[in-house]
Length: 175
Image (cartoon, rainbow, N blue to C red; front, side):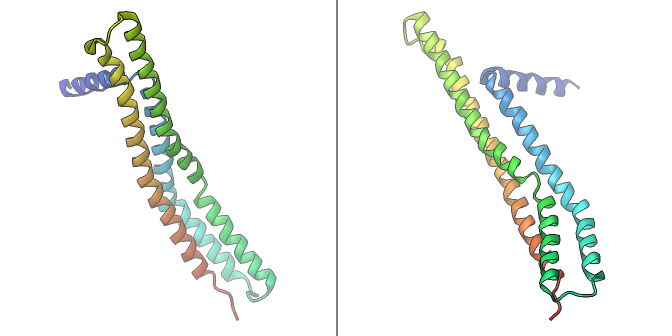
């Protein structure tokens, strides 16, 4: 229990050093990873049911050679692919916004440094240290959050593309 309290205190100290923008980065990172994990869960559970439903609907068709059958096949593939990649644009947006929030933290931290310099009238390093940490920590946090999200996004994008190819291969046209 003591270690948990100590960990909490270290986290709180880190958030205070990084300034208020760090809370927004943490919140956005949390939302981004909830979306990524939801897509992992979807691919392992519901997606398989949708593919099986599409395959059974396609195999139940008696005619699979006409132009209409080709369009129905394309619609089935598009529907499954759309549901599979539903939140990927939102995940990509979160990834793009994380470094921008880090940049916002840099700007607010530098404003803090300039305020200290204006108030003290000197370049006292000790008085500027909190502003400098407030300028660098959000930048680092935004970049780390974006990089972690890129890893999840790349995996999901590749998995989505390969699942779409598999579905196209399984929904065969009769000749």
